[in-house]
Length: 444
Image (tube, rainbow, N blue to C red; front, top):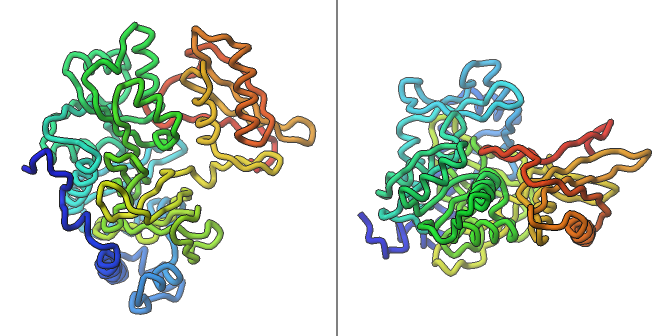
């Protein structure tokens, strides 16, 4: 067991000079390319069709410019053609320890078959990240993520147990019971989506319970970009009396290879777990490097079961190599995952994400918990109507006026805001669905 005062889980690994780490990363990439081409029909067929062979890849630049990307649609098609796990399983089924998957809200879930060896790598990597964020053996960790097919909370559970912390696996839902257990057990760490945890705060306030005076000290928030939004982070930190930790990537890349350290200066990108590139959204073979927004591309460096090699999930981010005060030499995503590129809203030439709306709304005094963005067409013009709950003690007209002015200034676009009473919109422990597009033609 490491002493709680030790800031690093693996000091040598976490403080390795970036140039040395890149050498090790490329060695792993070559290993993965050769393994995938020899053992996994999905990749061999893809690379043969694109005219690329592992021997063609001589450096990281070649990897970006020559190796084709993989998309979710390709994985789903593979699983339809070769049920249930596609022709990219990579290991004998006897080696599989866990079967997880997406929520499947739009159809059949995409299934993830994870071997025992890979699950061991997952646990170790997630423990390293959670230790950097401040999780310690003395903590009691209450997991309010759904513990189901959805993979979100399982990595945190494994990390907490590996570190030696106590785990309270409440899973999602039953908000009042969540609050009761927080108080009864003396939970010190909460893990969930930002939207569901804001709902916990809302429910506690309605019951006259001040969560900030309790035992909580740390919160892990993922599944949504909320914890990277300053106004959302402030509400979570002030409401619970905690330090908020942002983490996340995509389910296909589990474990989570992006997580903040205790400094809270943006998610560290654990490049020796999953190699991460930022590329031109219109050309995934054009690297953008540091400090430029683009599409993120991930590559598993250690996974044998269903390895993702240049997986393009459709998320936008920005990576910087500016040093962090924690001493780790991993790069960072200072703005977290900014949003999904296909979630970008374009109205009369103005581009913005749902996260931009959330950031602005939560900066307004009197803002409640939930909101909806409704896109409609009036005549020849697209219009934005935002229905937002306001605090029960607030004034609806004052909130409406302040919100419309603040949103117009922040988005550069006139919007109509409709104040809604608290509790209007349903709460969920999953990702909040906040955009309703009623425009008659294509979204954009």
